[in-house]
Length: 295
Picture 1: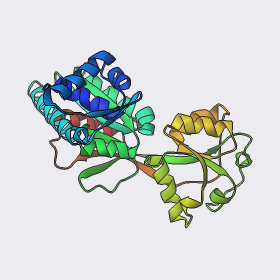
Picture 2: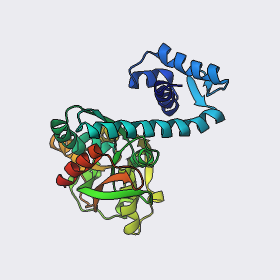
Picture 3: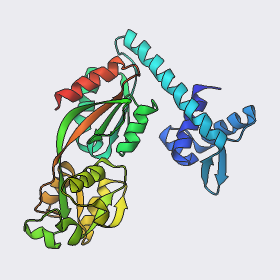
Picture 4: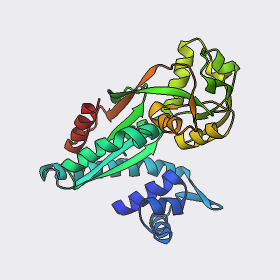
């Protein structure tokens, strides 16, 4: 068994699709399929169920996935240790970030790191807050960046920036005219398009409602989307309101495609995560220091 086979297996398991996994790891679908088949044949196991064009992990595959991830995480730790001995002249740093941070706040931070250590490869995985925290917990990422806080004792969280959420609507929406709104109005006067459950934006919005005595269950949510872009497009095209970061909304407001509703939501924090018990590599420490100076 090789690390390459493990890397291929984890990629396929995470995406449950051979072609998509092949695109991510820059291999042909046939090479990915052959690697999986070789593993199954050599060890006499079935790792995936083939269901039409999709594939699903078998019970054996799910058990093996945990071991494969742990082995790859240990291999990355060994690689980074050697890279440190060479003065960070080579190596890989795996970072996970939620969509808003990855799209707007994080790129300048990563470029500052790259300017100092151009031979360290940075792999950025983008997901929602739950995806990011899971990546730190299972060791697939060294540092994580999320919106808001999470309750996870194994992770150390540090604030790196502040952010404001905004309620946005299309120019033809009743709320586009600027009259003041109460939190009670949010559940009685409009429908909503929101990010999916598990996203930092959704969680922070729901927490703000609860603090004001409003139940998120009373929102008339007509659609949920896995990206800020989809939420923006849906809000601009229809009569539903949405909630996104001000950094996401402002360009669309300036273009006249959206309007900000007249209600102020509490500020939230952008947080940096790393595992309390795992080795914090020099590369991760440098990136963390750069991120903290952006605060």
